[in-house]
Image (cartoon, rainbow, N blue to C red; front, side, top):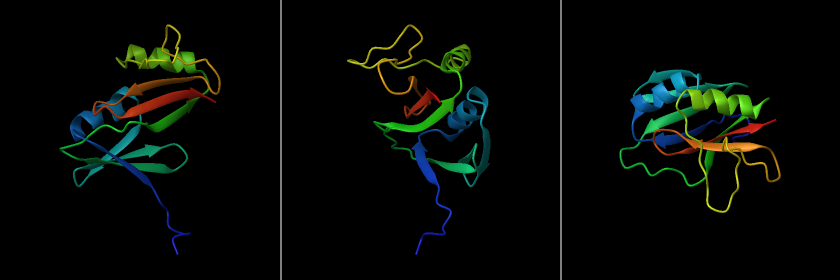
Length: 122
C-alpha cells in the first residue's frame, strides 16, 4: 500500500528561527521555510521536516547522522562555528570529542532545541 510513497522523516524543535540559523548557517545545509516549518534538503534527496512544538522535549537519541570523509576536519570546522561536542559519562572521547572506542569514529552535538546529532567518519 505505501511501498511507492516517498516517505520522509521529521523532528520537532522549540524555535524555528533558531533552527533555521543553526541548520542553514552553522551546519551549511540548504534549508527552506514554508507554513512555519523548515525542510532540510539533505544530500541524496532526503528531505527532512523540522516542525515547531512549543512544549518540545529533546530526543534522547541521535536524530541525524552526518557521514564525513574526515571527522577531525569536520569537528574542527564545526567547533570553529561554535558547535560544542558532547561528552557522555562512561563513553571515553578524545580531546576533540571524538569517540574512538570501536565502530565508526563519531562525535555527538546538539541543535539549539537539544536534539542530538552526530558526525561520523565513513
